[in-house]
Image 1 (spheres, rainbow, N blue to C red):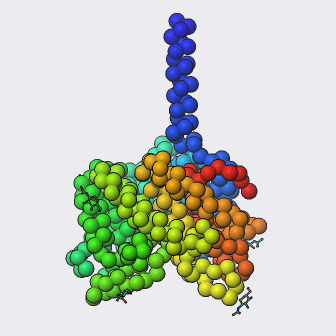
Image 2: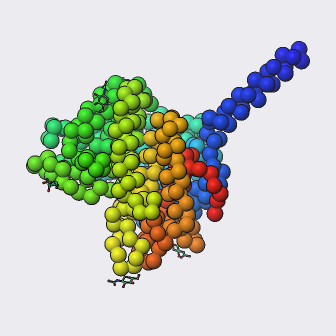
Image 3: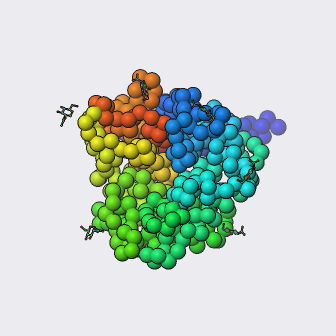
Length: 383
Ligand SMILES: *[C@@H]1O[C@H](CO)[C@@H](O)[C@H](O)[C@H]1NC(C)=O
Ligand SMILES: *[C@@H]1O[C@H](CO)[C@@H](O)[C@H](O)[C@H]1NC(C)=O
Ligand SMILES: *[C@@H]1O[C@H](CO)[C@@H](O)[C@H](O)[C@H]1NC(C)=O
Ligand SMILES: *[C@@H]1O[C@H](CO)[C@@H](O)[C@H](O)[C@H]1NC(C)=O
Ligand SMILES: *[C@@H]1O[C@H](CO)[C@@H](O)[C@H](O)[C@H]1NC(C)=O
Ligand SMILES: *[C@@H]1O[C@H](CO)[C@@H](O)[C@H](O)[C@H]1NC(C)=O
Ligand SMILES: *[C@@H]1O[C@H](CO)[C@@H](O)[C@H](O)[C@H]1NC(C)=O
């Protein structure tokens, strides 16, 4: 009797040790602490419970902020921002299966993609808490996904358009469609999603938007379908990677991981200064260039999608390769970009000399860097 009990106890202890090593508890506590302090600052200073929006925000950047704070709660199994999912402007619309998504996103297909990611992450959080209306969220995400898919046509051999005006085919909208399709297939097993993911990667691969540098330019010239040589924004170099990782998991084609890493590596080589991400418009000097309100958020999206890549790849080699870089981003955000009121500025790679912009969009971008580092960065201390 005692022996059996002892054996069971040993088994239970072994099981919990195993969960500690492999489960969501294997996070860096100091970085988690920073991420929650900043996320709490975001919610306290900028989140408006009356309308469910971030004061000064926009639909797509709000979507990224909501995705990030819910990802943080999911990883840590904490509930600090419980209720935000249903209260948010996006959540209120997700709770209504009659929502006019065209009006909601103003015809921007890429914005619809960010909103689907936010709704999925909020639905996952609600599900983890046993909250109501998870299915309603998922139905709404499916409706939005279908709107995106309906903007695919044969112009330039395929691809979805950037807006419902059908004037521009670009990288981000299609990278998002790849990521949503591959992840949607893994979530649901629906073959339509898998077919869409495959055809979107095939199109991206032959689109000419990625050059021999490994980086994606912004998009294609209307009419000629040539690479427009537009800016190689950081976020364009990571959403592709998280999408490819999901497609690799879905298909078992491991070459897709290599394809993703070509572009991650090119980012680290070409879009950094002193080992820290640098958007081409980033400049710490007061008289330098300034990223616009959207561009200020791109670096955090890069870190978030590298984090998703590492989760999908579930590969010690990839984690060892990129973990230190994610840690360095979080450390730079803390050291150079965070001001005494906990706001986070747009420039990460150098101390602010008047040119870094501190606002509701640059803050969640920095938080995303901390969340990614909490999961995959080295654990080396806090504030
Ligand atoms: C919060 O939203 C409400 C409703 O839209 C608005 O009246 C109020 O001014 C907002 N608060 C701030 C601080 O902007
Ligand atoms: C749901 O959305 C529809 C379409 O926009 C709208 O007419 C209706 O009032 C909304 N319902 C609720 C409960 O907000
Ligand atoms: C699969 O997804 C497509 C696109 O969203 C949808 O039209 C179709 O009904 C789904 N099929 C199943 C079996 O759920
Ligand atoms: C983009 O750059 C390449 C290489 O310099 C050039 O051949 C091509 O014409 C450029 N495309 C456009 C649209 O200017
Ligand atoms: C795997 O992906 C690579 C890169 O897109 C592609 O060239 C190759 O044909 C794929 N393999 C299979 C079996 O589909
Ligand atoms: C830009 O600002 C720096 C100090 O922030 C100053 O040294 C430099 O002279 C300025 N350049 C111009 C062109 O004003
Ligand atoms: C930090 O940035 C915020 C947002 O711009 C600003 O309101 C605040 O005054 C700054 N704090 C300090 C100590 O400079």
